[in-house]
Amino acid sequence: MSETRPCPVCGGVERRVLYRQRFRDGPLGDGYDVVVCRQCGAGFAEGIPSQEELDRYYAGQSKYTYDHAEGAESPYDFKRFETIADQLIPFLPSRETRILDVGCATGGLLSVFKQRGFGNVLGIDPSPACAPAARRLHGVEVRTATLAQLAGWQESFDLILLVGVLEHLRDVQPAVRTVAGRLKAGGLLYCAQPDVTAFADCVNAPYQQFSVEHVNFFSEASLNRLMAACGLAPRQTWRWMMEWREGVTDSVVSGIFAAPPAAEVLSAKSQVSRIRPSPTAVPQVSSSRPSAEAPSLSPSPSPIPLSPHSLPPSGEVPGSIPLRRGFGGQESQVPRNQPSPTVVPQISSSVPPPAPPDRETEPALQRYLAKCGVEDLKLQPIIEQLVRNQEPVLIWGAGTLTRRLLESTRLTEANIVAFVDSNPGIQGRRLAGRDILSPAQIAGRRETIVVCSKAFEREIVETIRNQLKLPNQVITLA
Ligand SMILES: [Zn+2]
Image (cartoon, rainbow, N blue to C red; front, side, top):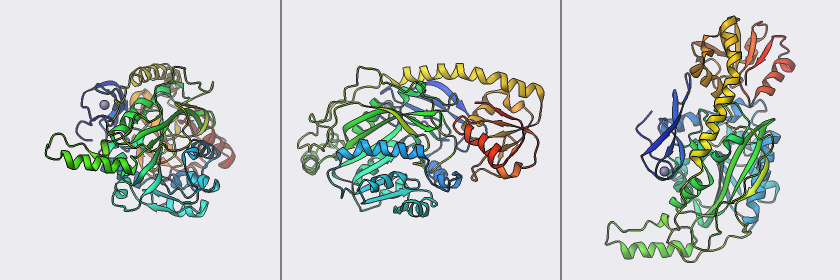
């Protein structure tokens, strides 16, 4: 845990606390405050570990290690990748476009670009398990590297992808600036992350958006403000809903942002040298950005159509930084401004347009909290019964939901014999004083199994019945 975290979007230090999320034995601490910045309105988690601690955590995680399919992506993943490719490809001038996917996991998204004729691709991921898996599964080159290491590279790219990354970072602006520094003049950054303004429309367990790993809650407005602060001009943004597991949905805000073209960089540099005598007035090259020619990003006045069965996101399995967890197949997508099939070169600019304040995030978080409060009440009778009966139970799932319930409800008073989780990364560890077992270790046991995961509920029940062929009574909590 560390000192007060400045707003990741504007750097402001005044915030309003909306909610305290608590975890029992959380791998990244015992919880955090969900706050909104009083200066710009962005939503984020306060009271989280340092970026160095987060980096160490993610380097030790791997989608590959917990995925039954040995790193292979699910059909939901590929539906999401296809959506992303659909959004991006109209902006790419050539099939030679040099593409870097930061936090690429096992390379599934890059494989989709390859299939569509864009073969000049590279991925990086902090987890060492990803590179061999990406080669084996997709023939995609992946290097084991962190965002921080990217800063030391000399290579530059036409397009850099940050999918499911920004919501995991403590130090967001330095990360975006690092990525922007690896873009060619006029190059594009594409990012996609959960959309806080539609949290209440997602289907998942209550409070799951405030997962162990997600520490930034972006809206379209806060995303645009962040990118502008890092010298990147908006080209187009989308808000969409995706299904990332059967019956479990996640909201997404994605966008394309452009680095200044060469002419503008030169112009900004000459401006810097001219003005240098005044130490207080030196314009930073990185702050030159969106010009008046950039497409308008005025918010759409019409409500975003969401799927009737839209649900919540935030997986509870740990994954490496860009673990494409929180993302599933898209249900609907709504472009937020006019498509711009080609990148419009910006000759002059340097006067950044004022980024609009974020007036949506706080009311959206309040709506989400109200909904979660109601849904959490529905779990109480099951938990109360477990406490009353004192029947010995195995709890399957040692992720965000379980750790929250152990800390925020009487679940810890139930007669929990052990926990079960298919993530090898946490098997053998302890939670609330009990062992975390592998699925294989519960063969022959007779205790009732309580499934404590919304996102993986169906998979877990199927594993119990069809793979392990266990006759145990099963209770689903979420
Ligand atoms: Zn702020």
